[in-house]
Length: 115
Length: 113
Image (cartoon, rainbow over the protein chains, first blue to last red):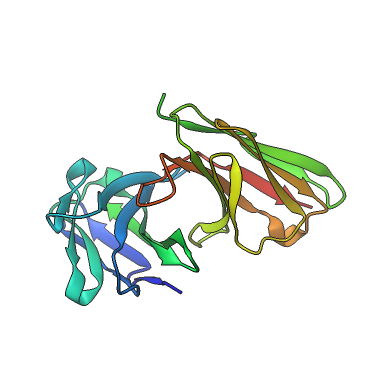
């Protein structure tokens, strides 16, 4: 079964600091990769996605992620975080599992940005 | 309309009650999903419907019964739940089953007493 690992469970940064959240997945074949964000009291929203092509993907609000196939990684980055980026971030993988396509979420990383 | 809506937002029920959660989307999506999210945990897939037919049941107990009356609606019928079933229940939809991102609703916060 596929699995998704997010290494940082709780990250605290000051405004303007750079962000990198790690994500690794276990499936060796073709995958689709996503980062979702859940702001306090709000529902899951898609930040960015990778299906194919350029491994450096740009998403909303200045976020980007890089797919490195050899490392099974899809790390999320932002050069300068803002207080409004305080949220929980989930990495997700869509890959075959048990004969069908399945989305598996990582455990999530809670980001707290201090003004 | 690019929203997935869910009702109710909050639900409190006893272990002997029967209740239903509702989900609706008008994006023409043909796949719809139920997830369960416990506090500080990621969403866990429960059911998947594709073209109004149940495609995936992730070994969910029978006290949860999904229903897809038409391509825009997805229900989750609840009966004889346990306190450990208290969680945020998320509905999502996507254009199709494969290789498409999912659009999530705000969820229904369920408390079982």
